[in-house]
Length: 291
Ligand SMILES: [Zn+2]
Picture 1 (spheres, rainbow, N blue to C red):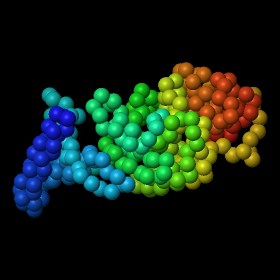
Picture 2 (cartoon, rainbow, N blue to C red):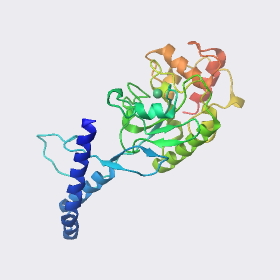
Picture 3 (spheres, rainbow, N blue to C red):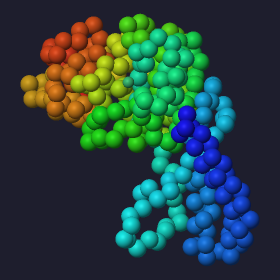
Picture 4 (cartoon, helix red, strand yellow):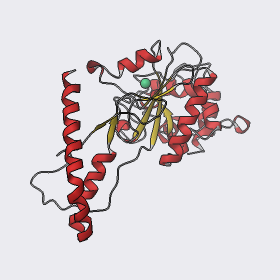
């Protein structure tokens, strides 16, 4: 609570700075020299990088101002500022199930101090979409994770939590709402088709979400994630190396059994044993050819 109160005063302070800075900003722009335009860009960043309070149904509600301060600056180096930049965009979407029992329970989880977890969106069983973080800020949903050579998924991804206890199907209304969010994100940020993945993909030894009930094929049919082509399944050739294939897709194979289980939970579904059968390898081979 103290932190929240402090943050409000902090936000007011920056609002004050921004408002009082507007006059000098416009006179600075008219002068023209590049270095004098810089304060305008910084104001733009301060205005743009914001943290939402609870914002139901994607509407823009109350905001907090958030600033970098001295973070990212290296003392002792000569400081010159380039004038061409904007804010980094998300390039991955990570899908989760909450393993909780209600939407409200998850919202509370993301709003109390001690949990240290959050996601950008939470989607209810009835299809209600709750945005809890601006797309441009770094949510805390991926945790210790790896995909390909990427080791900080939180920095480049949007986290979407689906209200689901992990032992139940995902209702059609919830998946329909998810598809709306995914379509918006893909359009707004140009996220590649293969970069819509699950928490268990990036943390196979720690996580199992979303569960076997999650309709990955339905998502892939709409352009979110990669799925194999059942009509093209063939026995993988003798030269095929399934471990390399898992790595090429993105899986961290340092715990190979966990990686195989994560792969099978997603693509084989009705068998999640930690060995690859001939059939499993044919699916993996078909996927491998798509990368
Ligand atoms: Zn998760």
